Image 1 (cartoon, rainbow, N blue to C red):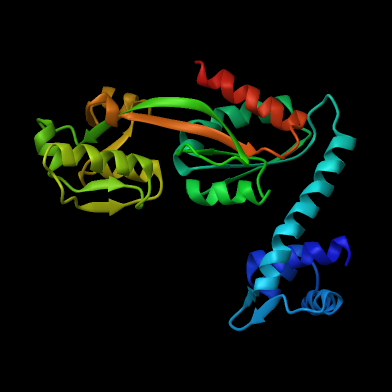
Image 2: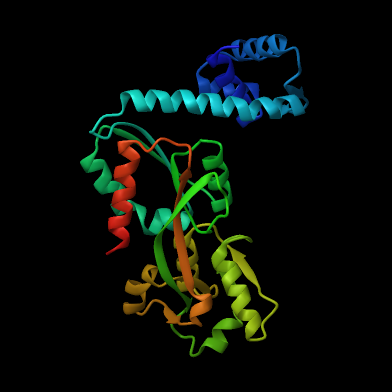
Length: 286
């Protein structure tokens, strides 16, 4: 069993397909198939069920955890031996759609200017998916909405904002707003949970939703008169000044939005990551 076989195994497990894994790795499909079969022969066990894709067997699930740790340790060793005072190398980040739209454009622009040798990448996803990628060492760090209780993850509160109810400007009062459809992210979004909890306290249990997964789409929908939403106040300040939306405050215990930066506790704190966290903290203080 060699390191390349483990990398191929991880790619097939992640993609659930020999074809997709081969495309990602830049190998021909027959080579990937042969290396997986070779690994199974060496371990004398079946690692995948080959029905409608490649699904891990219980033995494959066991190997997955060890393979991730082995690859991670090798990459960390390489980083430790090659890290310099000047930030260089790969920096793979993740963020929720809201965080990527509200906080990261200016931060990343400054980061690119200051540290052009860093190979920075960003993926957007839901908090739960980003947490899983951190757990499996697939990201160096991520901005998520929910506070975690996980000993394997280091988390820091970096942004805290007030949420406000928004509607089209012709809405006269909060009671009128609350009987409109709500434009929110999908179920499980902390802002949506806070909205539901608050609405229940004022006697509204049945809520009509129009689901969008991007804050800009939500705000544009509200401007168009589709309904109301609960969003960070900073995201609509200029729009309210222009008279495009109207905002209403709700009780403080339901209107606080927190964003955390998370990373795996066993990940090496490279100069590239350290400088990014430093810029995040500076931005949150403004």
